[in-house]
Length: 343
Image 1 (cartoon, rainbow, N blue to C red):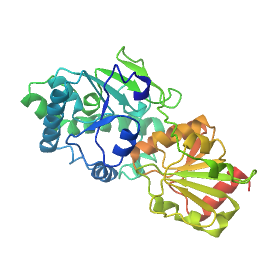
Image 2: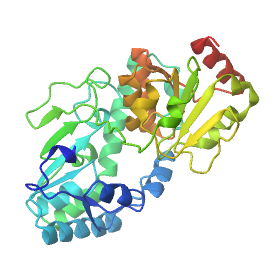
Image 3: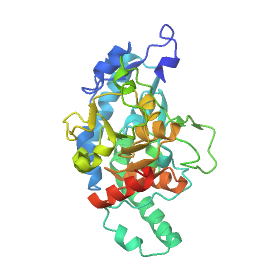
Image 4: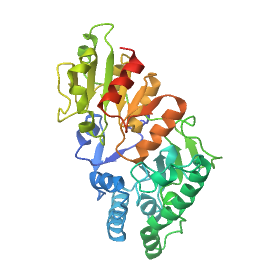
């Protein structure tokens, strides 16, 4: 996205990250430091439906840090991917906020966000007719979003900011780009400050993919990518010699959890190019992973790590593009892969 702008006309800076700083600088951009939430802690909390990380003290600290950075850099616009306190910081500094959001987090999303598998209410809702379960879920969600928003309301009052209804409203910007496909994540009638940007797929320019060309023609290839949040331990079954009938290529398995003669491991790959030759993808269901597979027409088995990935899987299953593998045991994996690949 940033590369589409003239660097001589626009000065684009990225929030510093120990994981991605090298990548950002390699592509010619500068970074800046700012207080931020610990992403791994947030993901751990999200898996337990624990929202204590969104407390007034921590939100306030990050809000003030964002305000200081916006002032120091004299920013004309801030772009964020639903960063919790960024809407407040932008408003406080009178700076335009462009939000990049997932379709399922829009307040205009036309489908019920299903209760996650790990939630204690899931087993009770599953026995109800879907229309009733969805109605109960929608009501419970509205209450939850208002409860989560309580610390935001206190900060907004403290700093004389505008009143926002709930957490979902707190996430949107002055302008909002939905980085999804409407076929997967349909919306009700969108206002003028919303638009579909479509999936943001980066074609990683790996220096050499010659190793891919050397794989024998006719080989049945399975691509495995678990992004930055996936649990590789759940895929250890792929080390079994049974899977030597396939060529398995992993992307990002930095700890080499999957290590066997039939497995080729790479830290980074040109995913679109790899998927062009793959017959199947096993992934965590993250947005940055499912769209390259969709563009290459590659079917997916998804092992989720948190509820947003479950919502992605629900959308994929409805369209026949993939299937949830969260309940698969070792034998089910063999049967399902064989059933799809027929080998």
